[in-house]
Amino acid sequence: MIIKIPYKAISWNVLARQNHWKYTRIFNEMKQSTWYAIRAGKKEVFTEPVEIHFHARWKQKRRHDVDSLVLKPVLDQIVTDGILKDDSIEYVRSVTYTGETGADKDEIVIEIKKI
Image (cartoon, rainbow, N blue to C red; front, side):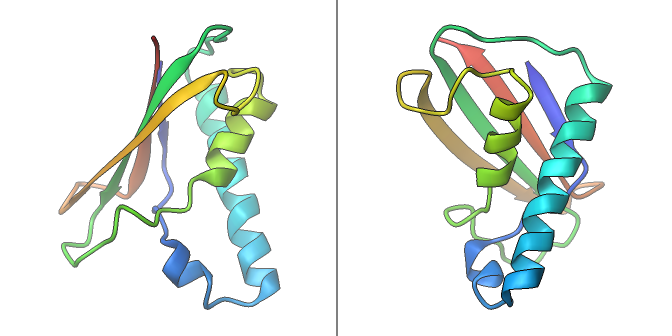
């Protein structure tokens, strides 16, 4: 299953410098964007262990850190929408991250695969 979220991936380093309200707003925006992306595509429910791959795409060609991406609200929304039963190690065996700059649009692409 592939979910494409039209949201610019943000780093924990950037988010940590924000005040509580902005931090909360960004989390809620990410959850809402994930909710819309899930509704727009084909919904699949996974009951077996999965591997999840996050691919961040940025329009800007400047340097970005992949190791500190904020993806917790995205994963939480995937669980809330019932695609995954839980995000514990019992159901999510691995999470990988990649990124690219100079893309045609800012987005987060998530691939969920059964093991």
